[in-house]
Image (cartoon, rainbow, N blue to C red; front, side):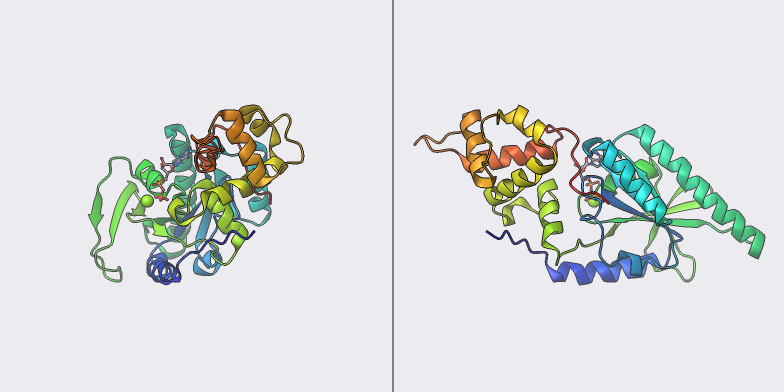
Length: 283
Ligand SMILES: Nc1nc2c(ncn2[C@@H]2O[C@H](COP(=O)(O)OP(=O)(O)O)[C@@H](O)[C@H]2O)c(=O)[nH]1
Ligand SMILES: [Mg+2]
């Protein structure tokens, strides 16, 4: 059984061109990833694209991730000399704390340039990430009520909008869309689990079966408790989904388990955090 998920190359080349154009303009790139899958939600070419740029990795949706593993990831980034931070972009306290960190980073750069070149440089920031990681949410949090203003200085691509979030910090108004590791099927599978691949192009029953196998390995208890799986030892994937449907009373009129309903419900329970804090990847 091979679950194959496709990402369209057309999306990638366009996204790549736009990122390339915009990344030239900024000093600091904030890369958002999903804290539940910090590896699969990374972009394969990003390191190359962001060369010579100050960079920060934000593990977003930390409220849905395993805090122990989140700490391991942050430590892992630190060992690689990359600044990492976990965040819940829906929480204003988290946004405020991030803003303080950003201001501090920008201040260092601003002062450094002032000392070396005698100019007061505005530090420009861009938010990037694959679909659904929370870019717009973060942008709105950082921008607050600030309005985008038109940039007309020479050397800056026409039509770019910058939002002033601090006297010398500008934020690019459109977050950069990165493409996922499309040729890595295990990454695509993880992205499908968290709902970042459109559900209508995937066989959800197959996806749910695979999900059950993965999570039964890593975090069996929440599944066992929620779906009453005490006597299902030895069952895997599809058969486990059948057992869940029976236990939950998700049965079709003919008496057969309603696997489509079960798959949808299971994935929705995971995505909304009802199965608890789950991280699928370790550094
Ligand atoms: N639980 C949780 N949900 C979040 C968080 N940040 C964003 N979201 C949700 O994730 C979804 C995608 O966010 P969005 O900003 O549109 O992502 P974008 O596609 O990267 O711009 C929305 O439903 C957000 O409300 C977070 O920290 N925790
Ligand atoms: Mg968005």
